[in-house]
Structure formats: structure tokens, C-alpha cells
Amino acid sequence: MDLKIKMLALVGIGLALAPQQSEAQNPIINEVFTADPAPLVHDDTLYLYTSHDTASVASNNYEMKDWLVFSTIDMKNWINHGSKLSPKDFSWAIGDAYAAEVEERDGKFYFYVSTFHKDDDRSDGGAAIGVAVADSPLGPFKDARGEALIYNEMTTDNPHGWDDIDPSVFVDDDGQAYMYWGNGSLKMVKLKDNMVELDGPIRYFNPKNFIEGPWVYKRNDLYYLIYASQGEERERIEYATSNSPEGPWEYQGILADSAPNSFTIHPGIIEYKGKDYFFYHNGVLPTGGSYRRSIAVDYMHYNEDGTIQKVELTEEGVEAVE
Image (cartoon, rainbow, N blue to C red; front, side):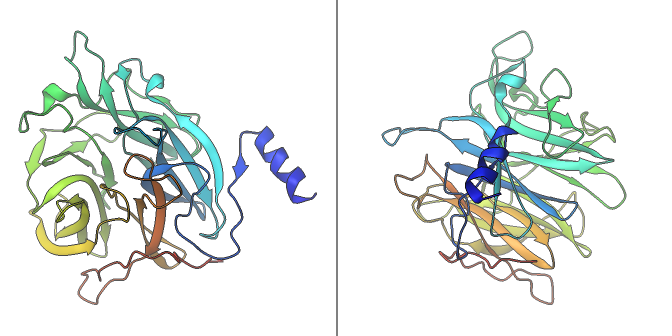
């Protein structure tokens, strides 16, 4: 089967191969505009869940109508699985598809999303977090609750209505699940074992220079909080560490400088086939920018004491792995 026929066959079942790259390069996805990378490894495949920028070249605001999924087995060739979830899949939601993350537990895949809530009897509107569930990393996903997990009136530490965005969910070794999110402050809550209900009060933190986009994980006995921070002119990435998923968080420094041609930057960190990767977005594709972003990836390296070396954002990207 030649490549053209193979690609047509894949499209027929809802898949499409991203353009083949003769050499590694950034951005890694270049046929659509993508942002807010959330990597997940399952059965030796790396899945990448992304926002989808659809704003016009002349637009001065975000337009993000759904979440896309990509996958790779070699960090070089990416399969575009298309749209797998949209705010329209949540009866209570309205508006754009902001950053999301998928967490696996007990054979199910939980898709935590940030979007906006309708003005109804439960909420006056504003940013909200929902969760969908599926039996496969590619879905189909469906609303797991029938209502938002977090809505604007549940958090009162910030006056603006878009502070409940960018969920990051982490399951610790003892089985306790935590969700972190926020714009302007970091918020944290425990989740019940079913992954779709809160298990206790919401707590608030103020890591140094924190803006949004938390990513939380554990390596060895250390917990890492990576986040988009207030840079000199544009967001950059900084991080903190803790001996507990509940903090306190000790500031460690700048992890990555601002992304080229994009005001925002959003971290996604994963270990895959023995290497550590730092995903982010920039605005360097033709006609790209702060509202037409593209996902890139570079290597990340740890020091012996667990601190992280500053990530170099490159045009070359990463090499293929077997």
C-alpha cells in the first residue's frame, strides 16, 4: 500500500497522519494550530491532548472550539486523531475550549477541561472546569457528571471570572488524587476515588510569580509544580518543589524563557522511553502568533539533587526514539 492510499485509509476511520518529517523539528504539529499540550503515556504510546486555535490572522482574542488528540510511538511522526471533545459535549458549558489534561485510573481515562459556564440557576457564568470519561485514551468521551466540577462561585480569592482554568490532575502513589488549577492564584483540591467528585475543601497557594497553567507530578520522592509565570514582557515557565502534594511549595527558579512569538506558554512534562520531555507552545508557524499557536517539545534534564536544568527552547526539537 503506497503512502497516499494508506493516508486515505486512515482518514476513512477518522485518523490522519501528520506530515512526515525527514528531520526532527519544532513545532511538532504543523498542519493545524495547537496549544496547551498535555502528554500522557499509555501502552508505549505517547498521547498528546491539545487546545485548538482557530482564530483568524486578524483576530485579537482566542477562538478555541474543541480539544484535539495526537499520538506518537517515536517522538517524530505524529498521528492526528482529530477532535475528541468540545464544550458542546457539556450541557452546562458555553464558549471556548481552554487548557485540558487527561489522567488514567483503573482502566478509565478522565478528561479534565476548562471552559465557561452558562448563566443559569447554578452559576452566573465565568470559567469552569468539567470532566469527561472514556474507556480508551481516544474516547469516545462523555460528560462524567452532567454538571461542572468547579464553577466560578466556588472560588472567591480572585475577583475576575476566569480564574478557574487550566486543570492538572495527579494521582499519588497511595491512590489519593489531587487537582490543581487557577489563574492569578494556584488552587488545589482532593478528588474522591471515582475521580469526578471533590473530597474536601479547596485550598489556595501563591507560588512566586504564578500566573496560570500548573502541571504537577512526582519524581522519586519529590513533587514538582511547574507553571506559567509573569516574565519581563511575556509569560515564561518557573517551578517549585515540595515533599508533599499539598505543599508548602519551595520556589526553585526559571525553567524556560518566554516562547517565541507568543505571549503565553504552557508546560506539559513527561518521561517517555527513558527520556524526559518538556512540551510547550509557541507562535512561530507561518501566520502564527499569540492566538494561533503551535506545540513544540525539547529535552529536559535533572540535576542529582532533583532540581531541573533550565530548558533550552530550540528549533531542532528532539530526536526520534525507538
